[in-house]
Image (cartoon, rainbow, N blue to C red):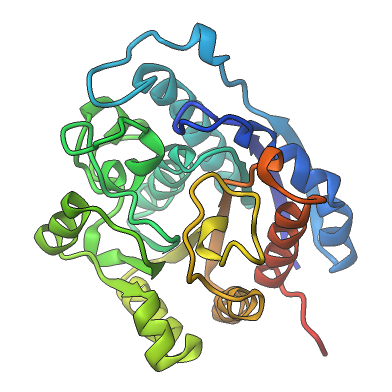
Length: 303
């Protein structure tokens, strides 16, 4: 059993659609803590880190990346909290908020392992690559940029919120469930040699085969794994409450199998769950699904 530390990161500065800042509340409303404790885990909830309102968050912004200064400040705080959790032998469970938070949470976790001479592997489960930089982004939304910054690209300050860039090496990443990339992201995947497993791979080969390869790739010569789950990887029929839905995603059971296979590794050091937007949801369905997927990665089984 684990000692889990829940950290809320109600960030909505990285996306154009409002409402995702209520994601942490929606997952807590689905009795997340109590259900984790029923599995035998010890759970502490540290509440939410402070995120400025949009109306107050224009400081430090630059062309090509909206609210970059404020996002960088929040990510630095989150990086400190995830590193402190791991230093205290706690498993960080970070509830978003938009996916820009991963530039902080994962950087902090990577710094923890780097201090011990290790490296962190990353399983990025998402419909999107999030591999844009301020120079390549067409929207300027930073939730489409966190992975690029974890790889040391883009804005120097965001890329180094927890220490020297890069926080993560491209060879230690596995993108899973990808089905919506722009031209710049395709170029970056090729140029940076990021292992990528698209929905076509899942369709052709099945979840188990793809996840076996993805986990092996991200585990090679790394100390532990971090999983970053964007709920838009699931088809909108099962997860309607996300800001950037894309048809043709994972089914309810495929998503659970992904998380169950991650649990089977015994190597998950921490987890992000992001992009739950209650404003766009129906009867808290997406937050409930997110909670169920969290339970799967922390050991819930049918038998």
